[in-house]
Image 1 (tube, rainbow, N blue to C red):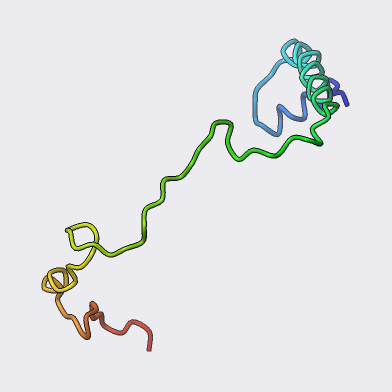
Image 2 (tube, rainbow, N blue to C red; image 1 turned 120 degrees about the vertical axis):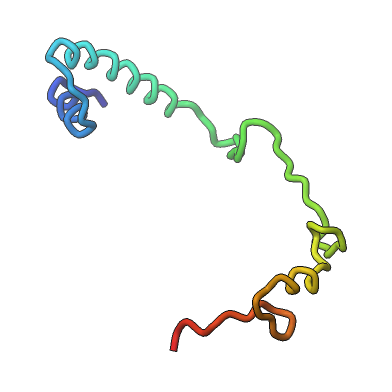
Length: 99
């Protein structure tokens, strides 16, 4: 795969990049070199390589899903509902919006 001057001009137009003829002509060999490198990468045999989700080992630290009784972990429903304009059955009560 290679690009020509018309393709570079079309890409520049689609990207709305102002480019004169000399700049466009200078980009043709550079883009062809990049495409050649990409084609070369496609030739590498990766059949035995497992796909990666990240390039570094990244283990999520999970915590148990438990309700605690501190200020951030829950167990303070009554204290929170005390500030509500209206509460019913342990929940915030809001006026009906949809008839």
